[in-house]
Length: 178
Ligand code: FES
Image (cartoon, rainbow, N blue to C red):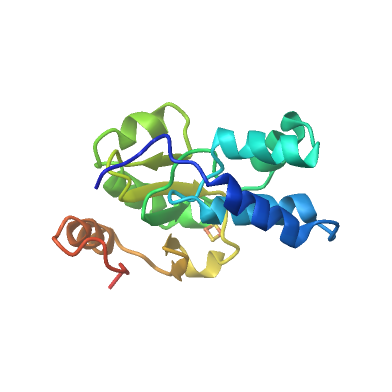
């Protein structure tokens, strides 16, 4: 997969999004959400945030504050698939660290998490690994979300199988834990 790190959202698309929500409650948040969704790598690139700022007259610093406050905004390119491991107490007690260790076998991932990152995306932009403090589903620990689907009582074997499946030829198709 070729990855264009200059990837930005077309300003015409941003214009359309901004005019659709102009004057509505929560305008800035909605615009930012839709611009992120319009980005091929599901993140708010700097150029797009700068454009939103200049068009809306909202200071760029305020846009950054919003983007960093809400966890659903991404400031870095995201992978095609996202795997989120819960690192809350209940999940930790039930072995979520082992699941994260399985995932951090991906090249470069362990170093990123050891350096304090809570998100890592593979160079080919296929997989993003993230951690969360708690999904609020502690009775189902350990909990992992794969492409937005929550899985309970996840095992190391399931995670290893998932990574294997992703490395097979049809890795662009939907993935799930089995
Ligand atoms: S600690 Fe994992 S869901 Fe709450």
